[in-house]
Structures are given as structure tokens and as C-alpha cells.
Image 1 (cartoon, helix red, strand yellow):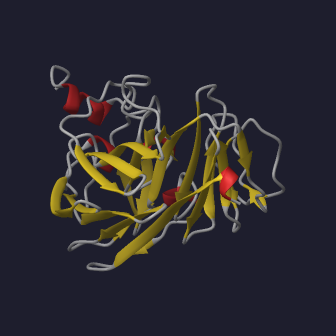
Image 2: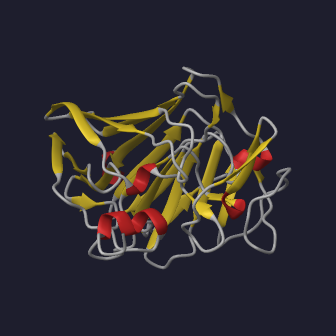
Length: 282
């Protein structure tokens, strides 16, 4: 397995992930490069000539570039273990002692319907020791005049299963981050999220927050507003070259803290909107 770079990423989140062939979308000043073979991620987002994401040439590790979907769990899953219906499950660990960010970001996705400003992708989830329940994931990418709409869903197959969805964008370091969280989950000595959330602490952060207001990044004369139909956000700003602002349907380690379990055939969705404004435009 280690001889195949794409499959090496299944077992090691720090293994290099080549982008593979890119699928390019464009509408007005907004351009998006999709990398279906590299976990269905957005390899680059460019607005009015400004690139917003770190690319694989700067941070080649599977976990560290672009904007990728996290599913069927998001963040670290403690020890790769959880219980469901009285049965213990052990998943493959791909980040030291833990399993991180699910399996969608390291598998190739299939491109379905596509036009110059929209693409739809899908991924069949396995039934193996990476993920024993099956199911299907879908995502769509839609470009507006000055906005980008991302939609993600997972539908259970024949078996009940826990699910947490998220997006993990590696934004190039902004000049300002405007963020006013209402609460923050604590982390234990091993860096794993615990409950319940309390008062927000000071950064630098690698933490999960409760927040309802629009989050704003400012860079190179542009303001990027981030909204999602969830109140859970992970913010990582400890990297000197990037800041991650990640909407999630639950906290990291949600399978152990507050699992959301889908019945067979049930679906969960997450919508994420990125919208731009040029600072001089008023």
C-alpha cells in the first residue's frame, strides 16, 4: 500500500497527496479548481486574482492543503474508537494514536453533473475496517457572482451509523480574523476535545467553538465572509502561513461526546457559504 501515494494517505494523514487532474469552474471574478482524485477537495479558490487556499506545492501532506470535506467524522476521533448500540468499533488510526477527519478527504470522488459554474461529486463509503457501515456522500460546488456555495451530505445505507460532517479550508494567512465566539470546548492534555463548552479562551487556537455570527477574513484588499447552517466551528490559527475556519455539524470526537446517529436511509446535510467583498467597494 505504501508504494501507492494515494492509498498511503488512507493510513497516514501526513502522507503526500498529489492533486491529480483538476476540474476548473469559473464565473465572473471567481475561479475554483477541484481535485476529485485528491479527496474531492477544492485545490484552489481565486477571487479577483487573489488565491485564498494553500496548495499542495506549499503543504503537500494530505491533511494540510486546499479545502476538503470531512466525513463521516470531523476532527480527531479519540483512539479511533467509539461505541454504537452497545458494540465497540475500532477504526484505522491515521494521525498518531487517533483517527482524524474521516475518510472522504483521502479517497477519489466521482464527478457527476458539471457545467462552467457548478459541479456535483459523489463517494460510496466502504464497509471495512476504515468504515464498517457503508453509505453514500455527495457534495456540490456552485459559483455565484461573488460567492461560493458548498453543500455536503451523507446518507446511511442499510445500517444505522453515526455521522459528523465538516469542511476544512486551509486559508492563506489573513491580515485579520474577525471572530466573536460565544463558547469554546475545552481540550484535555492529549489535545482531544472534551465537554461541556465554556467561556472562550485566548488564541492561538486549535479549538472548537459555538458561534452564530458571520466570520470574516481580510486579506489583500478583500473581505471574505463565512457562514454555515451550523453553530460549531473549529478554528486553527497556530500555523504562520494559514488559518483554518471549519464548519462542522458537531464537535471533534463527536462519536464519543454527542453522537448523531442516522437510521438506515436517513441523511444529514451541511451548507457552507463563502462570500467576497472588495474593501474599497464600500
